[in-house]
Image (cartoon, rainbow, N blue to C red; front, side, top):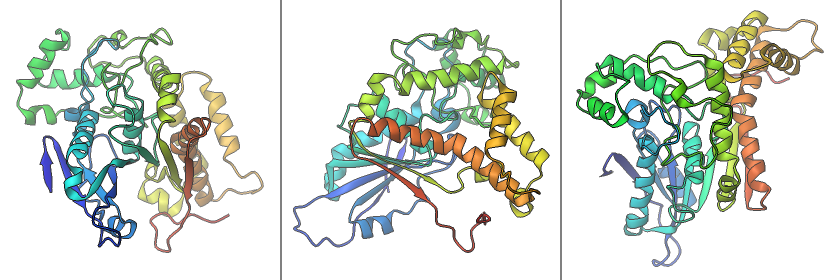
Length: 385
């Protein structure tokens, strides 16, 4: 275990090599996912992959939650570092370039792999001007996540920063630098004790536009809204405008020509599993299924949290598309699985496929997998129709 600043890096060396001692191992750097606010790279044991794949596996920790992604800047077009979690990953990649040879690794053959929110981080790093193209890593893997997913970016970070500021008695109306100084002078336990409820199907803290690691470039005010539309108080704001702005911002960052060109410079593997939205259901839903009214409630909440216009039409289309109309009576288990499929497609699968399509359009090495294996004792035993 080697500590480098905020990162904690675990190395899993490959097994005995059969080639000459002068050869170097390819390197896989794994960025954990699950959430932008919790988890760690420590539980992921890379020894089996390293042994069977004859590669060097590196797992890392990076700052999460308030410490990793607090963005109190209300001016989205100024340059003020806020994506500290992403900066930690960049720092780890620099460290690997400088030191991995001492562990038998090849600094010119590094694959950056991410799962879930970690995959979204990988996507944002590929598009970032803060990452030298093709120098820190050379291939990418995005498992069950993409920067194009609607949850990948926090669209109104100043709102959640204001919650923290009020909690520790720092005025959100202070100039940005003075506000940061006030927050830094507060005890860490006071800052971390802030109670912030993440929006449904979204995140309170995560990657956001800071003009340094994530930048919209020359594109400004795509829909007329602006981070400064939020007045800094923790009162409720109009969600639809910010939702619409978030989706447009994601597109402005990752669908502009420069970002697509950068994506095409790397060989890319994108993958999804059979049940991506499994955690949208509680244990009772999993065991007994859900009724049609609960499906409507879940999907209505998702549509309201993701789209701005034509909400009823979108909801009706989803229900129609993900209902087996050949069944005269819908069993709760089938309704559950149909709802799971709808949420999985919307939140994970469609953005992942779009990412793969963008990459393959430039005729680079593009790979897409679907992990469909169902274990006998799995937590989510779907009915095979």
